[in-house]
Amino acid sequence: MNRLQVKTPDKRDYEIVLDKGFNGLTAEIERLELKGRKALVVSDTIVAPLYLDKLTEVLNASDIKVENIILPAGEESKNQDNAMKIQNLLIDGNYKRTDIMIALGGGVIGDISGYVSSVYHRGLIFIQIPTTLLSMVDSSVGGKNGVDYNGIKNVLGTFYNPALVYMNLEVLQTLDERQFFNGFAEAMKSAIIKDAIYYEWQIENMYEICDKDLDTLEELVLRSITIKKNVVEKDFYDTKGERALLNLGHTVGHAIESEKMGVLLHGECVALGTVAAAYISYKKQMLSLEEYLEIRDMFVPFNLPITVDTIDLDNVIGKIAKDKKQDNLGLAFVLLKKIGKAVVDRTVTKDEIMASLKELEYTDDYE
Image 1: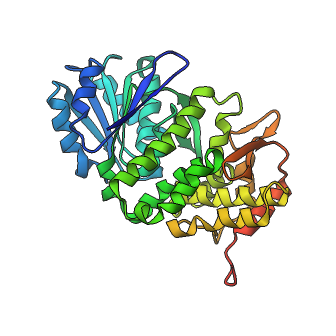
Image 2: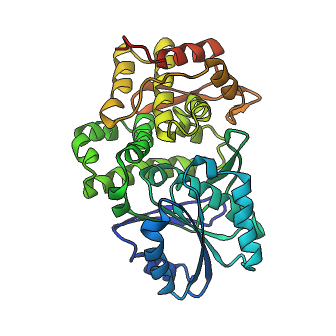
Image 3: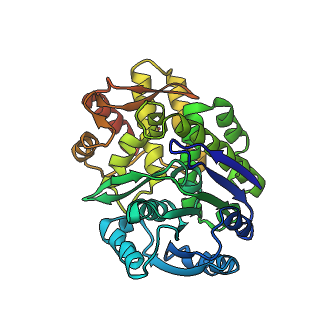
């Protein structure tokens, strides 16, 4: 078992626990003095049949009365209507702010659960139990919560930290290949922005990662969340520029994801967005051609796309213009000086973004 403590601005520090099973959650419930409370578990139609019964058993052993709501799996569920369904259950069940909301699932479940937790009675006790690699290395850490609206990802949201993030690494071995590599995109992103040595480790351990070796996965998750923890502790509210570095690949990636909703997964779009950012960095003479090509091509062994077809480039550009990273100073675009060194750049033009999108367009003679 590994554990990390995350420092928060409001002094409500919390721990991230990496375990190999659910039974260790009992000790965490006791440590947080939550025995005897009521808990609403939010899950989805894929995760609930696999893990809800076991989680309920562990919680019942701590004298916690468990109710649940199961949402349809997929990004489409992260909306205001489902947020209201969860809120209505809390209100009808007379939940107190000392009761618990538990997110059992991937990033969609974690985001919508955290969002509701933050507004119900101005703050319900919130526990994250991420069940995908994507949610472990990214969305469960850092306190960002939200829902989509009118096709725009996370345009409504809050900053609200959990009381605990509990990661059962064994669940990663049940992920299908596409979902697994979807999460790996964020792990590679964290290495590219902050840690060239970790990036080399990923390459050296490529086969073990692809085989889902449990000890290798533990190190992968631990190193990824350590990077994110260190960034978030410096810039929790995303106002100092440090946390913006975590958005490498997300400006173009989110726009493509909105355009290809239901077709491409988040990590796949982050991979595409990272290729676009690396291309712009190359064109701005920040990266060499060789560095750009290495970043682009290293996504391929991990089954992540580096090209995309049938997207409306003007629509994607329009979505980027509405990106929440846009402020009075312009669009904060994350570029690369080298592997392990990301920077925020506000000089990226529409023409440069369009050129990067054209670089992503699939052609039969693509090399």
